[in-house]
Length: 292
Image 1 (cartoon, rainbow, N blue to C red):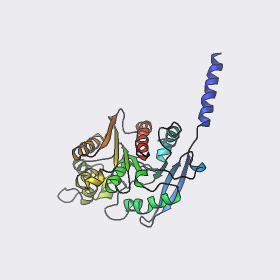
Image 2 (cartoon, one colour):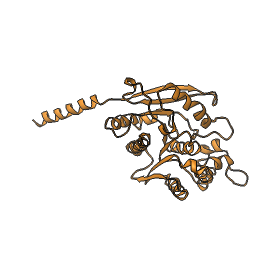
Image 3 (cartoon, rainbow, N blue to C red):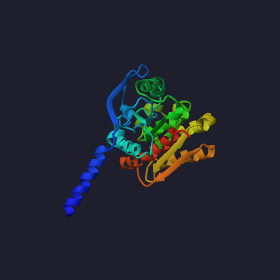
Image 4 (cartoon, one colour):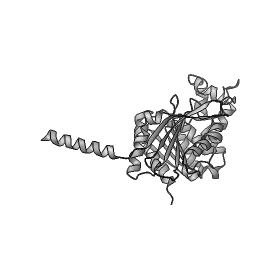
């Protein structure tokens, strides 16, 4: 009898899961870029109702971390499954999620001009994506998010382009103080950052390109009233090695009067943390997408 009941419950659970509407993930697509000189690969998630409707949808640009690519958020983060469930339960509105490949660019224009990734993203990538798919082309319905290197990219873009983006949600964002970057450009992490920002000069001073693109400096020196128009969500594990930068980000925003949500949860810098907590970012941007 117990075996029969167990089998019945499993059958019911399987049937319910099979009936849950599923969105579509398209991988292996690319956009030709005249600015970078190479094709930019991307994956895209279309919500379950996309093929049966004619309406346009809000969009989330979801950025991967260092050494990953455009497939990571689906393969390791299972964002499509999480979004399907949240949409079905009415927790978030149907949205399109676009996941571009950024290699190890840190989502910034390289200091020597050889890979202007940021210029490409705004001048080519967003316009072409929003020309291919039914996307609401209004900053209120355009959000950006990411983890680690992608969290850095999301913050960089939201702060520098508040006229384009309405919301920003970051996880374990790779935010560094100037003191930390000076250490990185002096020792083992030099190969990560020197090709992007340049090296320390003869006096041991930070390169100008880093100072001009450091998220913390951009907050302090940018057009504050425009920066404040973006809604920010910051999430980091209590055992994450990037805790200093995330704490400095929170303090800087508080001191400047920039409203934001700041969450510290149990966890470290790994996919278990991001997979379990991306739902909070989806909730956050979903609330921004909702009309009030």
